Image (tube, protein in one colour):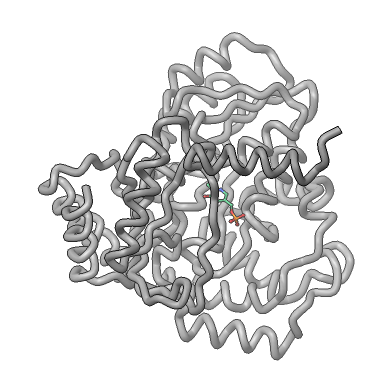
Length: 386
Ligand SMILES: *Cc1c(COP(=O)(O)O)cnc(C)c1O
C-alpha cells in the first residue's frame, strides 16, 4: 500500500496544478479597513465585519469585563455548568431583537445548522435546499439521514415541483437569507407561499443579512416583511455583522426546547466563553443604536457599483455588502488577487468547491468603516488590472 504521506502529497500537487490550493494569510492585527497581512499593511475588502464592530472599543471593553467577571473558560457544556447569566441575557436580547419568543446560542453557525436540521428530521423525512446554500446547511441536510434534495437557485417553481412529487412525514425547506458568495437575497415571500401550500416548514439562515438589512438591522425578514409564521426557524450568526463569534437559533418555545433536548451540536460541546456573550451584547446594542452604519454601507455599495459599472466590470445582482466580481477560472481569480496584493489591496479569491465550477470570483465585501476614498482606490486598482 502507498504510504499516507505519498498519497496525500500526490493529491496536494494536483490541487496546486489546478489553482485550487488554499493558503492561509497570517494577519497581525485587528479587523478594519487596513489589515496587517504577512507584515504588510493592506487595504482589505474581504472581511464579513460589515458594520465595523469587530474591533470597536465598546465591544472590546465588554469582552474584557466579561473575562474579568466570568473568567475565560466556561468549564462545560450549557447543560452541565457552562450556561452563564451572560449567555442567558444575550439569548433574551437576541430573541427580542428578531422579535421571537426565544433564542438559543450555539458555538458557531456551522454547528447551529448541523444541530437544528438533525434535531428536527430523521430517515422518514425530506429536506430541500437551495443549490447555493452555505456548506453548513448542505452538510446539515446530508448528515440528517432525511432524503436530501436541492432546487435551482432562488427558484420557487422548482421547489414546488419537488414538494408536489413527494410524500413525507416532515418536510423542511432551507435557504440562506442573503447568499454568502453571491450577495443576492432569497425570494422568501414566494418560497414561503410554496412551503405553506405543501405543509412544509421554512428555515432561513440569515448569516449575512442580520445587522445589515432592514431599517433596524433585524435582517432579511425585516427587509422583506416576513413574519414568524412564514419563517418559523431563523438562524443568525454573530461572527459577521455583529463582529464577535457564535450563532443563535430563534423561534417558538417548543422549537428551542426541542433543540435543548436533541441538538447534538448543542448538547455535546463546551459552551463558548461568557466574554463572547458580554461582547456580543454590546455589539448588538451598537447594531441597533447606530443605524448610520447601515446607511453608510448603502452609500458605499451604491458608490462601488456605479464606479464598477463605469469601468465595465461584470457585477452580480446584489444590493448587499457582498459585491462579487465573477472571474470564471480559478487560475485567473488567483492571478487578479495576486496583482491586487502588489497594489496594496487584499481580496482572497473564492474558488470551487466553495462556488460552482467555472465561477471563481473575487468576493469583494464592503464595511461601514471603509471610506469613499478607499473604495475609489479599489476601483482604480481594478481598472488597472482587469
Ligand atoms: C459563515 C456562515 C455560516 C457559519 O457560521 P460560523 O459561525 O462562521 O460557523 C453559516 N451560514 C452562512 C450562510 C454563513 O455565511
